[in-house]
Image (cartoon, rainbow, N blue to C red; front, side, top):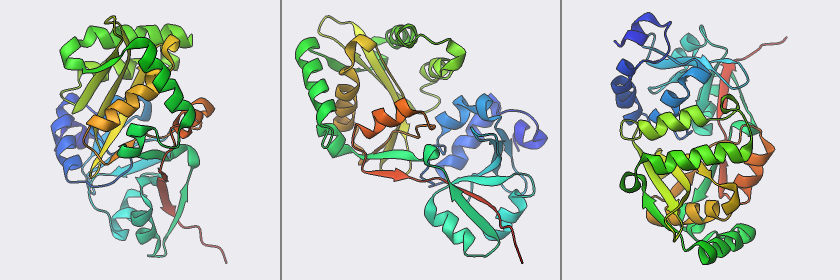
Length: 288
């Protein structure tokens, strides 16, 4: 048992990473939370604690402050009841698993639009099919900047960090109001967390955008971070299209929009093929 699992009162620790990675390797759930990068990088925001009893799971808090249990192994109705002894809900589960639990008659289900991941078919994203405005932006950027997409390992962390600092200045917010801290940690720990980094450089060699992505369930990739300079708006769609064309996956997951209109508009403008709803399972409230 890991230190955090034994105590069940401490945030995830570096000593938990191997155990967590092993559990996730055997866990085929599709929501983007089921990735080592997300669980580790957002451990403080969600107050994640690794617990082994009554089954391996994380305890944490959702963005809207519900206490939730995130199971790391297959779940049946009896296990669900036991997890709900210590949490308001079990979250996130995809529809098939949640509906199977609900069929036991003891559970209620709900989901929230802001939690839902955006899924893109990689071949369509590579061509920016259905995203006419973004395709025009990408084409203009390609013509003006003569860009290339290069592995972060080839150009070094300084390139991504320079873009990140420039992005922060562009958005005009204090770091604590953004995901800058998590992004910096992801850059530094990309090998440990299984992330691939790619940087967009102009023909002059200037870094203007980057992304960090990791493996998701099945034949998918999860884009965890994407940052670009505001002066190069077309760098985003160009970068996404190039990454989709060369990553070798069938699907790209851009994660949830957190209910933020700007995030939602940007993700919808790229013409997602589907939304992956993430269900919360809780005890049924009986009336009569």
